[in-house]
Length: 586
Image (cartoon, rainbow, N blue to C red):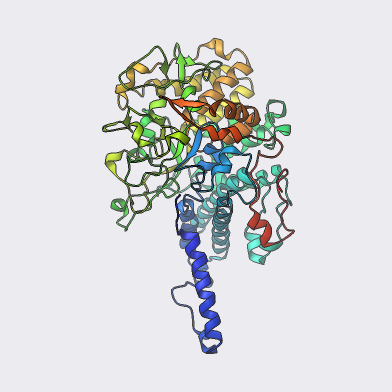
């Protein structure tokens, strides 16, 4: 079991200590309450520092922790068929209900409340920055317009996550902040579509005023806004997320056209495919042409601070006994590994999961694999993140009888590069991609399939597969005799149904372990059929004689309920009667 005193605990502890001190003082000396607090900036002074307020809004992008990770790896991967929670067992952290769904409630995992709270803290910083910008009479008008666009982009980014997780959430904007009506703002005032339209409106305002590029790295620009607009419209195009109202029979063709419009902006921009798939997930390439918008992280050697601006969201996800503090969370499933199987270079759509298979280094067999497997999943006998001096063994799994032997690779640097922080936790200087070029091109291909432009969609998907085919010699030459990947022939794109299957498969392989798989399944309206079939098969997994994942025997996904996560109980308790719980949850 991992125990901690994190930033939230310190906040509560400090509040308790302050309360005790204040009570003691009031009984002995009233003069104390007249003393100006020290070490605290007044709101008036803070609001007068407009650029600093904008910077504070940006700072919240990476101000997260493993119990409230803004990259949503527990909610987008562990909740899906791509990843298991990992760690020392099912009680290590409180994320287990997310991976089995059947025990998910408004109070379990309690981590949901931390995530809700910190996302709304992020929204609050954006609202304060917008008010500061509106009241600043000294800032250059051109700069002010750009900064407002950036802050609206950030607010929409945080709200997208809130709606993505909880569907109906309270819309608290700068107008609510100005009149202090936060505790009178209900979560059912707007429908799902109305909330999404508010998010779109913020992104559109950002798109209209932001420059195509910014002189300072990490700032939002016009292309990032276009990419996010495409993501919003694609989400809306399939329905409201609940399976009864989502899927191919609910597709909104007008929204799909908006996806095509905004992805064309990205396609014609300076962004593009990084030549080697493996380079995308190495820190030295973190702001390459692949990166449209990313949460910026740094090493202490980069910014001359004590620990750097480390990525604390992934702090548990290092491989066991490979890193000084590798806690072995975010473990790929056998189902995901099987999905990388190929026959004649193409996916084994119908047969991929009939038999358990895994490659062994230096022992090629007739079973071949998509090269992206070796960039995504750490496996015993293979070099860890390409470094032969750090070859994985079965000893690099913390609890193989529960979570098997695979490890996640994308969110960690190479072992030789070391951690940014390593005691008692570990943290890395790895950026978190919010939008990368290939992701956006897959959005475009998806819209092309659904609007009938099948050959154009095939062209995009084959470009992505060609990049995967070219991504062997540089990093994974040791697996070259186990890789085989081919481009899709025209016969695979003769119907929407066949093309859709290719697109959805390609998205899984390309974006695996990047925090989005569950949201894809929900968008397509196939979460229940996919996950319940996965639970039934995965509970019988075996690796080299070791059984694991048997806890899935208790897992079940209920459509009409589980599409969204329950509003945290603590939020319902704070202001009784203000919020309506999502349907299906008590």
